[in-house]
Length: 356
Image (cartoon, rainbow, N blue to C red):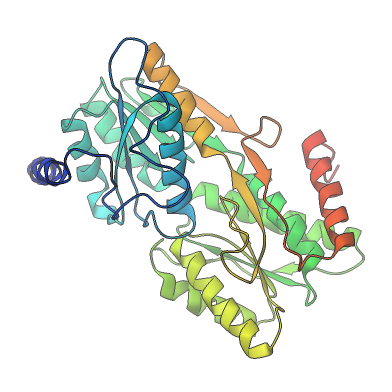
């Protein structure tokens, strides 16, 4: 039954692409700011072949958060290497496998799935399509070894460092001593980010002579449920949380909406949010900084490996030390002396002395 559904989905994609003139516009209604899938910098690979990459995503590529950043990463990498792109976004968990198979049947060279939640579907499809490459962002370090045909690579930004970057800023900026984290799904990478956020925020509190407590993490179970973000943020602000961080895509956008509304009613910005995985300063008034992940570099390494015939069977890690992770710009809401302290602590992360 799944195979039949996948064939139907493949036919629908073919008709959709034909109606669009065979271009690279995503199913989410066009490319968001940050990349142009129709304007690659290169004409293709050295062997004359035009390679194609497709992304599946359960959130929207216009969500102003995770989905958008991951899509732009693919587009930016494709522009550098001269690849064609396509995307299927806002898909349900029950359709992960069928969506992947549909792109496989259309002859895509690389399938890019931005999240650990796609692991089972990727491994199943990878076994059935041994000649196609599968890149799993936030995939487990042990996932490539589970692929029967050695055609899966995990792209794994350091979750602890992601949490540290946000937790340092949260620990410095909280006035109530309570910080909050909102998650999408209870997966290993999200739990790792939360753990890093908590330990760094509490450590910074100790260094600054105050007590910082992280509220218990909450999970929406759905990356697209912005209404859950509104609900969670209101409840956590009621508990005194005044700095937020999240790993929940559109849910984070909902939380920022609630925070902005709270601040507007208060007459000044009293509750803050730290964004990820792009530099989203200015998107919402409450955003005071961002944790930035250069996923385009990781995707680009996969493209190189596909072209060279060396793809698969490895985990590519991303850290501050190799430039995959970094900090975004800080808001003017962060006082100059706090910015100086923040940069000092980030330097400790870079040189390996943080919390030592």
